Structure formats: structure tokens, C-alpha cells
Image (cartoon, rainbow, N blue to C red):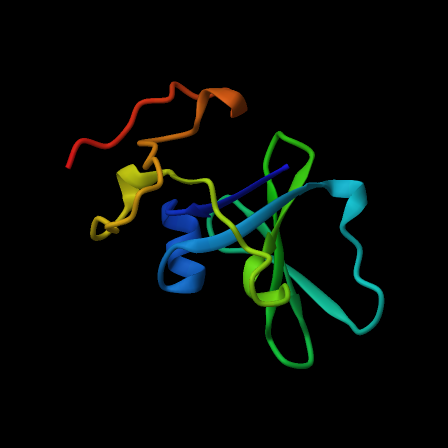
Length: 116
């Protein structure tokens, strides 16, 4: 559905930075083997491998989608289109992608961009 970097304060608290994310509808994301643990730091339910501690995915509240950790995909498959929740960004990231202050309009937001 989308590939992006999330800068919300929840993602930053869990990942110590922006979360490189690929968005899929919830039924499309399943764990095939191993045990997982679910937790919530602030507002976002997350799933983690109990054996190695890898963060697997996050539930995006109210949307019926899961944000899969892009670091789990083969190299070259992550091609982000934008940054979102940049109002929480600690430092501006210099790249050519749009940096949405909140959420893009395609996901119910305002399309307001950060002005650096």
C-alpha cells in the first residue's frame, strides 16, 4: 500500500529514530513460525520476536493495516515515497521526499508539509 518513514514519537521511542515502514492490509501479514510478543509503548500495538527481539510490525490504530519493519525485507525492496508525522522529527532529514507534518491526505490527513 505504501512505503515510508514514520517519525511519530511512538516510533522514535521504540526504534530510537524514524521507522522505515511498508504498509500492508492486516490480513496480508502473518507470522509463519516462531513465537511473538505483543506490546504497546504509547499508542501503537507492536509485535516482536520473543527469541531475537526483532520488531516485526506495528498495528496502525484505526486503519486495519500493519506497518512491517522494512529492515526485514531483501535489500533494495524498500523504496520510500514520503516521510510522515515529521512534526515529531528530532532533526530534519535531507532528502528529496515529501516530509508531511502529520498524515498525507491519501490517509485522511491534511497534506501539510514541513517548512525547513
